[in-house]
Length: 389
Image 1 (cartoon, one colour):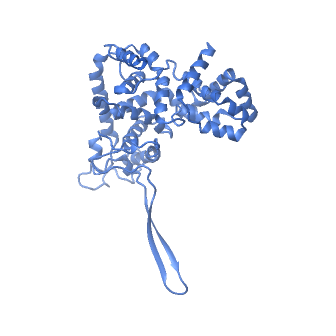
Image 2 (image 1 turned 45 degrees about the vertical axis):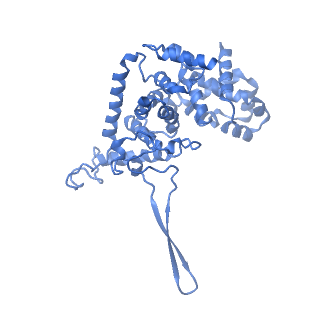
């Protein structure tokens, strides 16, 4: 009955003409039910994508989704494809040194795309979701005879090699073999595309639109859970636009955590080093014995919590647990203060093992966090946050 009552509380808030964001945050902090796409809808609100006034949603969403289509049309281009006479040497061409050359941009983009392609093929390997075809492929891309498919621009090379064997004075035997680099996630055939290809396009467009930051390894782990939540939405009218909505929600989230990914901002108030220092101070306040043990072993937060904080714990837990943790993190009004308490809770919960461990065993434990109920961790984090007050 408690669960049904909780569903009703969400529905009461989400059915209002103007959604009370403060009430939604308070409720979502304790977890958002998976039923009927509530999580996907709540995340769109909590990540400041959807306005609170539902009356403007149709117009607003149409504008945003059309804008995203425009991004694809303008930024996923193949230089030379528009040449009417087939002569690519006229004007712009692959060897042009003109800084405004489309080819120059194309080659620079491919350097970034190579890293994106590598990373998205490894996304959430414990589930098959990202290898599956999407119901709603981008027709302009998938029906382009592979011209506009991003992964074809950084295709794995086919290498030919020959083994030469000579026996005695006579016959030389030559055995030709073809070796192809392993592909974690295979691309789909013409007319289809896998979810990882959609995520690749989102990250590529983000990098193009944010040249000062571009793409940094790990951003794939941030977009993954968002896109998964949106592409799994039971409401087909929203699921159809998982790519565009996911792009804008990811962009909004990155605007809040971008300092984690920019090395030159490591020491700023919201930089990663500052966040790790805050976590260490909180640990000292929460559990002095563990803090002293870490000091004695010289077990620095950079060795284990860099990944925790930068990737919002997306690498430490299975995807369903990550979704639950993110419900709470996205509901935190002073984002991402509560993340510090969650990281501290993870350490405090392991205090007995950590106090009895040496440097290698403790580091291994923290870098490979043991499976446990995340609700236990979140409850402990709430307890630590209240100690301060």
